[in-house]
Length: 292
Ligand code: ATR
Image (cartoon, rainbow, N blue to C red):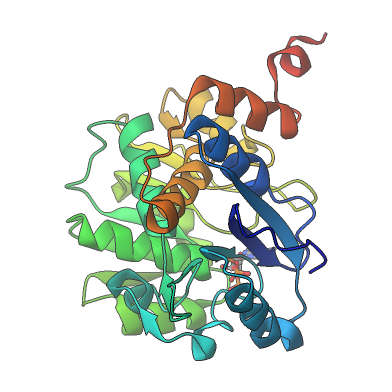
């Protein structure tokens, strides 16, 4: 990393590969300003072989901590000293705090962000019914742990590669996760109070998620953690059917706010100014939408 260390500023960063499109610098630098803190948050592209070296750089230069994104969320684990309960449960780390003495603690705020966004955008969502989770990657793990911790009675887990869903269910399912075949997903829709897409399907540049929602109950909530684009084909289909929907922007913001709190003990808000900046960065601003 080339940034020259400035001892008077608070410092944090996000590491990943690629990292160019990350919205985290925009978000955290907004919060430094909003909280009246002098600080700088950088995006650093780090290759897997350089992970440990990068951690050493952050330690030596007195960073308060850093975020971790694809593909390093599990690869970072062997290099850290301690873990929060949620990082242990999820088995992946998206936030590291570096103490004054250099000790590193791994946290996972993805589940917190996932749940806070759900509660904000769909208050009173049908929590007493099973949830249907599509996907079995890191995001699915965070969602499953968050939902089970929040008291959802049962999760139907459905992934293209069934063995990965089964492995996830066995590891973190507490006997409350049943695996559903990818080809049976339209049937599982019928019993679901909440349907969550954690796969990459529907993201810009990916195929859309083909999911027949016609069997959904009228109070079912459809949640897509994809935020590029914000209004995915899945969410549009759900809206067309009169179902409540939750988009992925709030999950991004709330996982970031939880990390900011861990590092700086300040409450970072999802205010209108931040929302406008994020929507503009995503090309989803009012002017973009208003174009004919
Ligand atoms: P993350 O950590 O962000 O959740 P990931 O671990 O790469 O990302 O997981 C991506 C998810 O998208 C997986 O559930 C993957 O399914 P597989 O386990 O079968 O790979 C899912 N996915 C990716 N491409 C897909 C496709 N074309 N059809 C269905 N699911 C797909």
